[in-house]
Structure formats: structure tokens, C-alpha cells
Amino acid sequence: MRVTVVGAGVVGTMHAWQAVERGHEVVQIEREAEARGASLRNFGQIWVSGRAGGEELETALRARELWEELGGRLPALGFRANGSLTPVRGARELAVAEAAVARADAAARGHKLLTPAEARALNPALRGAFDAALYCERDAAVEPRTAQLALRAELLKSPDYTFLPGREVREVTGPGTVRDDHGDIHHADTVVLCTGAWLGGLVRELAGPGLPVRRVRLQMMQTDPLGEPLPTSVADADSFRYYPAYASPALDELDAGQPQPRTAAEHRMQLLMVQRADGGLTIGDTHEYEHPFAFDTVEEPYEHLAGVVESLLGRPLPRIRHRWAGVYAQCTDTTRVVHRQELADGVWLVTGPGGRGMTCSPAMAETTANELGW
Image 1 (cartoon, one colour):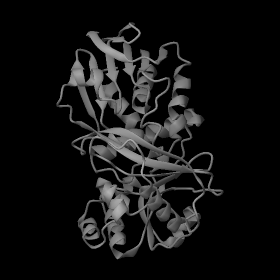
Image 2: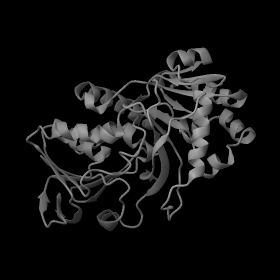
Image 3: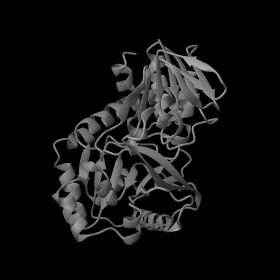
Image 4: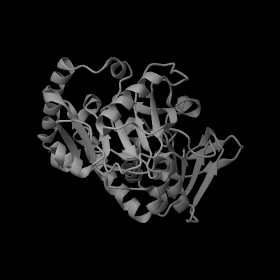
């Protein structure tokens, strides 16, 4: 079987990986020299803790297994089973954490409620004051800026894999057949469009105006090396407001009795923080849903995040060396894990994972491969 994958972000690269692993001939086409979108501009988190129960959690847990298998084969992915801690303060935040631990699927996530001393035994860098911490043992991390490169380096060892950068697919010319902007025609049994937040051009032409996917913009930053290990990923209680696993009467009480600070509410913020391989911290994030998106970043969210991080670490942040914005595609029905649709004979679109893309991409690609009979 021949497969053409359009897009070299993490979703596209995982589809190419699945096809090659199953013995198929793969051509992967990327319009940039390298992928430059949300696949690089994220935390590199394999984030199980906040996923909705049911299909979303099952997808994340399967993806977590696949990431760990890949990490064993490819050390350059930087896979580490680091878990996460969400420190909480006050009775309302504590009640939300207690409700999460009481869920029927808490054991599958590895959820435990820890005392401050127990949390600091796992992550001594958390020297700030807090009353308890929600631990998720199944959370993990990879290096987002290099993960696709490591996967592709391994794919290029196969004679069945070809990577064609700097080409944009412009037209479907027949079943499983596309033309790129160099005028080359690519014949395959299946084409998979993994174009991320690029929803215009050919995608719009094929899908029409009713594509149930929206674009979401975020802001993030990265620091100089911390100078000490941050052994777990770290979130704050604002993440309870964002992730569906934490929906409960206790969360309603938190929202009613302890609203977010103005900046956090205006920018729909949460703290997520992961230490990179070089010791720096990736910190975010914000969420902007209304078009047109701003073309610049704004400073207030960064100031808010710095204050939250410093209160948890009990020390000043290192110098901020990178600030950036990114855009990802999210299903408008946020209960859906991904949008998978045949747009033309043998041409499939796989998009809209939202903030789940890095976490769930291996399992999303596996499902595509299974459903299409690869």
C-alpha cells in the first residue's frame, strides 16, 4: 500500500510512523522546511490527568503506552515518566482535588492527594506554600522541539519513506492522488491531510464551510536553566477550570466563591510548567478563541504566570529567554478527541485535537491506521 501524509507536525509524523511500521510505502509532504506550528510550540506534555473520562482518557492512556514504547526505541525523543503535581491552596481548591481522587477512573490516571511534605519529596523545587497537591503518576513529557526530528531521523532509515519539505499540496487530481505546487503528482492508495491549524486553501475547498473545527491561539514562554531539577510537571488550580476531568460540584463552588484573578480570567489562563532537557522551564498558557487573533503578544499574562510560578517555587524565575504565540486546531465540539473525515475518494482529513495533539497523536494515528485497514 502507498500512503501520502500531508503535514510534518506530530500528528502527521505519527501517521507516517504507523504506515511505515505496518510495511507501507510513505511519502510525507510538508509546506515548510520543517514543521513550525503547534507541534513545536507546546509543553511536550503527555497529559493524562485532566482528560475527560471515556474515549478521551482511553485515547490518552493508549498514547501514553505508545510514547513510552517509542521512547525506549528513540532516546532522542526525551521521553520521561515524570508525573505531575498540582498544588492547591484553601478549602475550595482542595475539595476539587479530593473530587478528582474520588473518581472511578482515578486509579487509571494514577491520581493521589499528597501532603506538602509528600509532594516535596517528589519535587523538592516546590518550596512555596500550599496545603496539598494532586499527583498524577501517568503524566509524562517529551521534548517538543526535537521529537518530530527524532521520529523522522528514524523514518529516513527506511527505504519505504520519503520526506518532501517545502511543498504545498494544491489539488486532488483523482482517488488518492494529489498535486503539489512544484507540479508533481503523488499517487497513493490513501492521502491523510494532517495540516494542523492550516484550515484554508485545499482543506477549505474540499471540506466546505461547515468544517466543525476552530482555531485557538495561545501564549507561552521559556526560561534560562533553573539551576536545579524540576522532577515533575507542575500545574496550578486554574487548570481545574480548563480540563474536563475536574468538572464537579466542588469546581462549581470554586468558580462561584473564588473567581480567577482578572488577567487570568480575561486570557482564559492556567499554569502548566515543564522542565526542558537543558534545564529551562516551559511555562504557559493563555487561550484566545475570537478571530481575528492579535498579531502581537501581551505582557500581562506573562507577568501573571511569573508570579504564580514564583509563589510555588519560593524563588525568582530565571531570565525569560523565549516568548511566543501558537495556534492549534480544536473541534468545536470539545468532547470529540479528533475530527476524522474522508473529503474525497481516498483523501482523509485528521485534525482538531486541540490541546490533546502532543498527548494523543500516537493513538490517533493508530486508530486511523486501523480504521483505514493499513
